Length: 377
Image 1 (cartoon, rainbow, N blue to C red):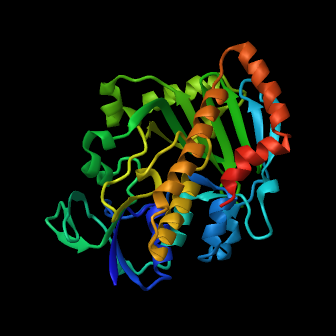
Image 2 (image 1 turned 60 degrees about the horizontal axis):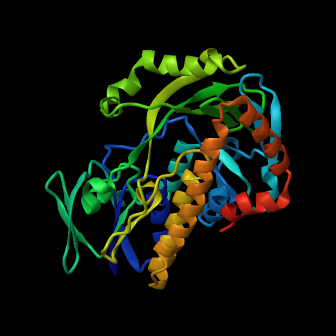
């Protein structure tokens, strides 16, 4: 029986573990750096039909319906005036069993944990080194060492696995943007609302049937290295309030009063695609590649990548990286394009952008190419 080490108990690592539970040819263990997983976190994620299809194979369709929501549209608004620009019908990509879904990230994590035996998840496990000889030897900060046949790095954008393998080249780069995220109660629209402004955009969408909504804003912000490295800066209430006030002044919504439990974090993205030399080491999710968060595919791609890796292991093939690189390029190009177009500030450019948005949002060929190819596995 082959032994697999999964580094990181995020969405990708936990979904892979659920798939491995269905195949007894492998044993696995998940190593998580944190001392526990926060299952009270109220922030949201969007899951397109590509990932819902995969989640339903492990029973996601049985999740409590009050804990999820099925938005049918993305509505585009001008942030300053709240004038609606256009909308995209998301339901056209749904099928009878798989629908575009929004929910709290913590609800998905809780669901993924349900079928994983507690003894297979080891907390407070900080990986510090990897030796690859006849088998993989993993070294942890608590002086524990274990051997495995395969290693899966699923430890996020700040992946320790990646840093061990690629040194400084494995570190992500600052994307000259900051994210604000929080919660809103009793927002009037149960679809996804996307507000476009000069050098920022924000999104509001429902995360359950209890009138709770997720707020996420991406703001262009150049910082010097000292500021980027200062973790306390992004916890400073004055800094956070200043950012929220900046976009609130350019918005028709009273964000200062509406957004609660707000947190701030710098946005990092991967420098480039990197593939380990060893054939028995894999990177998945954000550890493989982290995109700009402007296409709402982070969680879906983490699930999809884990499924591709599982099929590769199950079939003893070597298609994982080839498949993942192709999809990564598609997602990354769309994410960068969205980030650019959402943040236009020149009034003339905004005028023409809105005209194109109105046309493209109803063009079936464009939508099938831009969204359909991503949403279909």
